[in-house]
Amino acid sequence: MWSLKYRLAADRRQHKTLGAVLLLLGSQLAAAQPSPSTAPPPSRHWRVCLGPGPVPPLISLDEKRPGLAERLMLDAAKQVGLTVAFEVYPAKRCRLRMLQGQSDALPLSATESNRAEFQFPMRGTVVDASRRIVSAQLVWIKRKDSLLEWDGQTLQGGDPSKLLVGTRASFRVATDALTALGLRVDESAFDVPQLFRKLAAQRIDIAVVLQEEAQAYMADMAEQSQLELKVSPIPLLSRDFYLGTRPGLSAERQTQIEAWWEAIGQLRDKPQYRLR
Image (cartoon, rainbow, N blue to C red; front, side, top):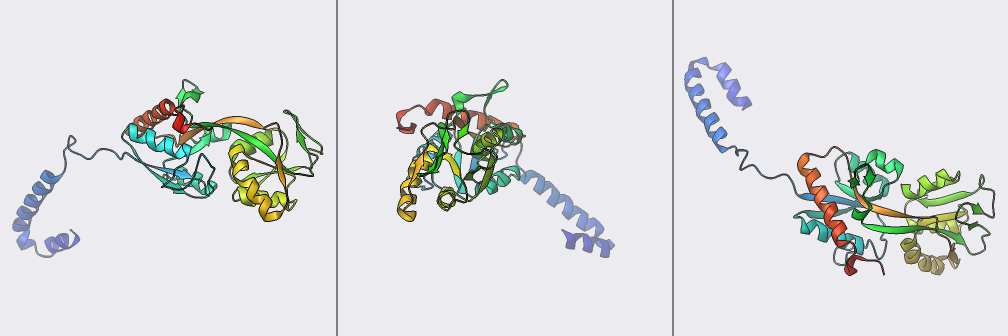
């Protein structure tokens, strides 16, 4: 195109001939453009960002043997004609990718801070729990010799102002709850194994993880460090987790995510997707 414009300016004697050629090419290009009725449909492919650590039996990060939550998302997407690719990144990177449009969705709890940034399935002004992926408990993990104990309201056995509670990076459902209790939070651990190593090394006083994470990693930690960790009998809280996406989607993409959320709600309680 640039060379054609250059020739047109350099040799005006060919103006009429070139003009005719351009007119012909323009008509051919216009004819080749798809009409609105034949234009390709909006993408039906969704990129779901997952954190770097498996959470058995919910998240396996194994495409050949998906976990319960992965299988639910995949099967629900297929039911409404969508395709899914799982991407694995650190939790903070997942959030950044979402906000930059590089990923399309990620599993999240609808905390106040998450709702300020991401979109969840709603019924009116309330998050629609019937379209959650899963409900899960957050539990306290402590060293066997620890005197700390959660009574359901406060953490007993130590000065709350001096205690340091650890959780994995960007795990807002935990950090928001702990901050509301007035506790200091260390969220520098990349994943649960690193968090448990920090607990064993007494760099934090107590940790908070998903119950499924505790079950998956505590036995390995005991073997590696010969230091036994234990779960406090009363959980910190129970929360629902949803497939979150960014706000401001196009009408087509919003219709897709609404259908996907609906399919998740329809399939979730079937035996093949339930925690046992």
